[in-house]
Image (tube, one colour):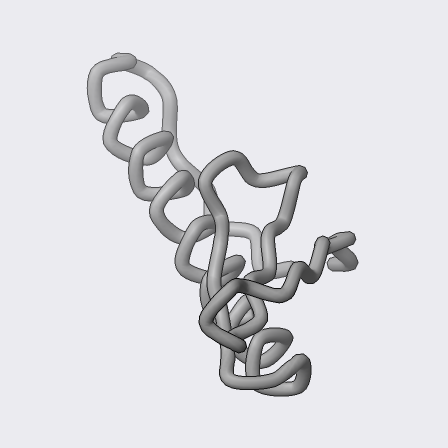
Length: 71
């Protein structure tokens, strides 16, 4: 999957990176390279957490069988 991110320098010299498509998905790094590496981890964690929430909701829906799809 491809996501667009926004890089912004912070006052303390670090680089803050945000993924606007995923509300609250933000990370940082000492430089641009580290920030981009860190946002990849943050995106993965964000997507995993949202999937876990959705999977938990499926247990409340009788007759629906969750199926795992790898992307």
